[in-house]
Length: 145
Image (cartoon, rainbow, N blue to C red; front, side, top):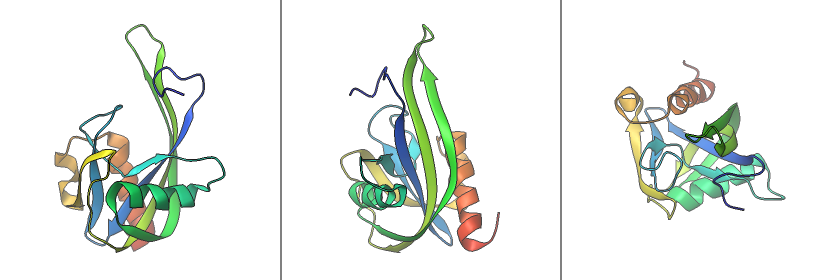
């Protein structure tokens, strides 16, 4: 099924891969939000748990390994076109995870992948929800806000 103008929502999993001082971000290589900074992630596959999807997507998009996954939030992302039709509809399940190994290399869905210090988040072009999820996930894993 084409992701644009779907007849049902897609379930997406985003992962805030964290170290104490940084988060792993990608630059999106495909719509929606093409070119923006984002969390690695993608669609959940049939028969796959949310955490298994998170681990697979992070490995595919960035080549890094993760552990200690925890659900941060879920977000309804519904974008309309100029005529008011639903162009994209995702139910996003965002999780946080600790980085356990590997250096980031952008996979086929990402234009770029890199570690970004938390103090740089406000200067990057990203969806406001992404920044909120990163900060909440960091608090869950490292005990701060």
